[in-house]
Length: 448
Image 1 (cartoon, one colour):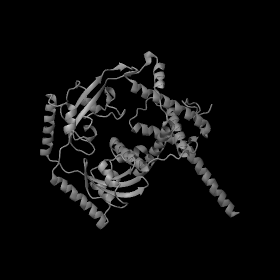
Image 2 (cartoon, one colour):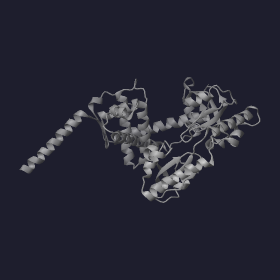
Image 3 (cartoon, rainbow, N blue to C red):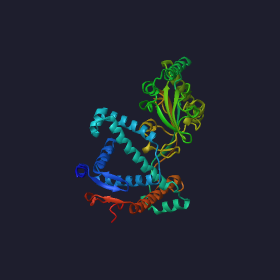
Image 4 (cartoon, rainbow, N blue to C red):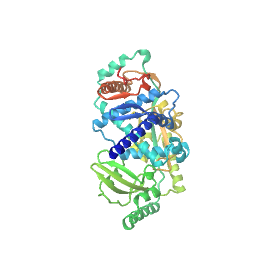
C-alpha cells in the first residue's frame, strides 16, 4: 500500500509540474512530432528583431503561420531521412552569436536580451533554431529539385502578365576589377614557416593543444573562434585547391607541414574522417608586409591604370596580365553577381560599397585606385570599370528571356510547394490552440 501511495504521489507531482509548465509556456500547436510553444513565437520575434528586420507590420499570426510551415517541413524532412551538416551549422552559429554580441555591445548584454544564464545555453538554443531552419530549407529544396520550365511555359507565363503589370528591370551593367596584393619578402615567409613548424612540434612532442594554438594564433577570423575547425567534403569542398590536396592526403591524427596558398601559410590537423566528410583544424599565418611593399604595389597599379586610360592595353587584357585575384583574372576581371551567377549587376540591388565605387563611372571609364581588404588580405588595391550598361526598361521577352525564365521557374516552384503543403496538412496530425482560431492563415492550418 505504501508503495502504491508513493507512486501515486510521484505521478501527481509530475502531473502538477507539467500543468504549471504548460501555464507558463503554453502549447500553441502540435505539428506531427513537433510542438510549437508560445515562447517559440516570442523567440522568433526576438530573432527577427535582433537580425535587423523591421517588425512594424508583422503580426503574431504571421510569425505563428511561418513557424507552422517550418515545423511541417521539419517533420517531413525527418520522415524522409533528410540530414544536415551539424559542423556547418555550429560554424554559422559561432559567427552569428559573435556578430550579434558585437552589434548589441557585449556578450553580457546579448545574454540579458535573450534571458540566458550562460553563453553555452544561448549557443545551444541558436543551434537548434538554425538546425531546424536548415531542415526546412532542405525539405523545400527536395520538393522543387526536379522542377523545370520549358520555353513554351516561359512564353505562357510572360503572356499571362498584363502589359501594365509587367516587371520593370532596373539599370544593369557589368563590373570588372583588377586587384593587386602587396607582396612580402622571402625572409618574412620563412619566419611564418618556422612559427608553424614550432606549433606542430609542440603539439607532437609536448602534447600541446592544437585547438588552443588555433584560437590564440590563427589569423583566419572565420575559424579561429572555433579552434580552426572546418568540415570539408571530398566531393563538394569549397576550400582552395592546395588546401584540399593537403587535407585529403593526411591520415587521421596527422598534422601537415606548413604550405603556402594565395591567402597565407597553413598547417592542417586532420581530426576525424567520417566517410566523405573530413573534420580538420587549421592555423593560418600571413607574412608581414612593410610600407615599402605597400607603396610599390600601389605604384604598380597606378602604372597599369595609366596604360589602360592611354589606350595602350584594354582593361580585360590588363586584368589577365597583372591581376592577383584568381577568381576574376581569367575572365578579364569580370565580377560574377552572387545573386544571379551571371555577369550583370542591377544598379539598385548592388552591394552598397561596390555601388559607391562605380555609380559615377561612365561606360568604359576606369575608377581611381581604391585601398581595400578582405578576410585573408589586410590590404589590397583595386581599380574598377563598367561596361555593357543597360538602362531601366519594361520587361521584354526576347531581351530579358533569362530573367523571365527565372521568374517563371520561381512561380512554378511556389505552386509546387503550395500543393505539397496543402496535401501534407491533411496527411499530418495538426492541432492548433483555440487562442489562434481567429488568425487568417495563408494555408489551411485549421483544416476548415
